[in-house]
Length: 102
Image (tube, rainbow, N blue to C red; front, top):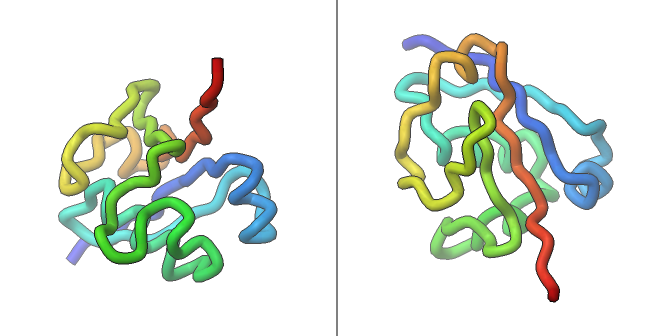
């Protein structure tokens, strides 16, 4: 089974909660998908459980977005496979705090 070290960029409020910098790394196994990254993140930083995804439904929180290779993938299926650029570490998986208001 192949494992990958995935770079994850977090928004400031989650950095503060997890007591980390703007970027962390997590290990995921094949098949590596968006859900695996969030699962690994929650395992490495238990204080983030429920902040990115709902505890019960495991759906992404509405005011957070996921970006992969400069593309918003927030509404893609959670089991979508990560692109090679993320798997090899040249691009991060980004969790971005959406801005609401008007």
